[in-house]
Length: 153
Image 1 (tube, rainbow, N blue to C red):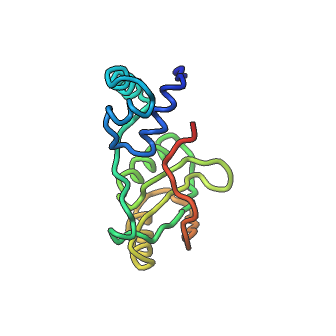
Image 2: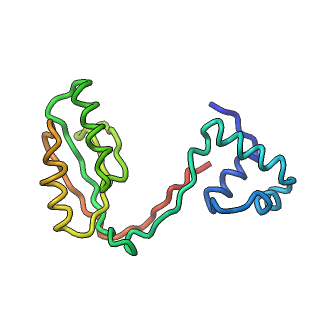
């Protein structure tokens, strides 16, 4: 694991709050000049601590506010079947997150669609076309209480 000092942690917290901050704005907040701040940020990017910068889109405003958590169980568990499932699921644009989990299910998917009819079509036509899915259990989000991509550091 990479050793991060207090300044690195401050930089990460600032960038997680607002990824569009300029180097100058960040430097002012951490009481450093722009050059060391720039170099630290580039090091954090190079070493993979900062993976990428993205815009967070309001799902409701783009017509994809129906959120479903879908638990998937595979019929069989082999390396080939698992790899094929991962390849198939990553190609589905509605699936925004996929986790391999322990317990009663093999995978947990987070899915964004327009509405129930869209989800029904997705389950039948997209998930239904993936081989070796044994069962699907859907949980529909009624309201979002907390949603963040921020990693607590």
